[in-house]
Image (cartoon, rainbow, N blue to C red; front, side, top):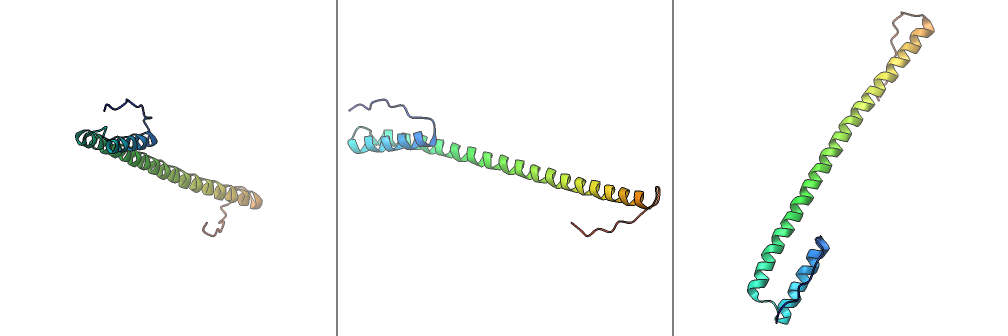
Length: 108
């Protein structure tokens, strides 16, 4: 018997469907053991490439998250510095210009 050419999507679902179809062909006696072995080797390579892509995407997202967190930390530190400078300036204006005033702040 000859296998009918089937088109499968190039997605994980399509790969799953292709593997299931190949198993059905083996059970039905349409595919030879050599064809099944070749197909399984190809499927394994495709799965490994999916795994590599997922690992790369995960690493990229982790790096983006780390960069975001660093920028957020810098933004918070700068906002705190601006707030402290504004409070100090307001205190100076209350008691007279050019007078240094210590503003006591608890750690944030």
